[in-house]
Image (cartoon, rainbow, N blue to C red; front, top):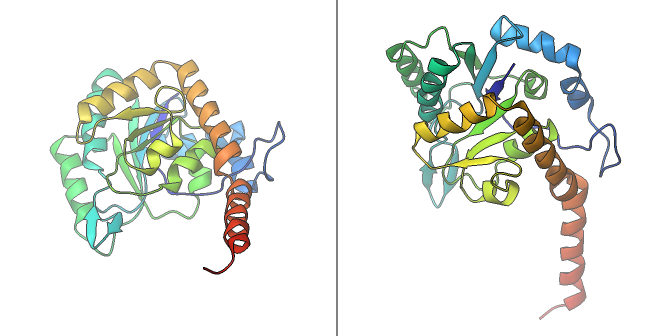
Length: 246
């Protein structure tokens, strides 16, 4: 079973089987439970042996703002890549997690129109806004994040907390969180063919999925957990205070 998804941010925590920088939230304990995983797989795909491809966050192009400019979180490329992947893996499904964005209320309809155009109605599902993204992660195998100008996407850390391998575009914060080929796979912007190739590679290699997911989890634990980041902020504040007024 292979699941590909892009999901919204959630808890960052340590592994339950080794020490780490904080307790594992109950949501992720459930996400790592195989019984819960099978239930979620069945809910998402109707068959826990099916492959799931998903995309999360708001279903809108407006995802981040820098000096008044909006940048797209590219869902079209996820859908177009899914069509290519589905030809080789007909059991694959796409799950889009998130509701319409207030700034782009028609974007979700455009995505649904693209799904109809590509005849992927039986492949792509729109889940809308969900309060249980960590639980949904338990039914996923891969997370896809295609964005431009996102800053520091917390969704990458959530994927790492759930030990999911990530396919992402190089975009500021993604490069701070992902080491290409070690804790995730980078793909070019606006290139669904490259996205499909990365997904095809991961779907066919469970060991690679496991390795990338574990390495990203380790990155989250060691560098991106709330406890680690808090200590860094404290050290910065202490340094500024020690310098005194100028």
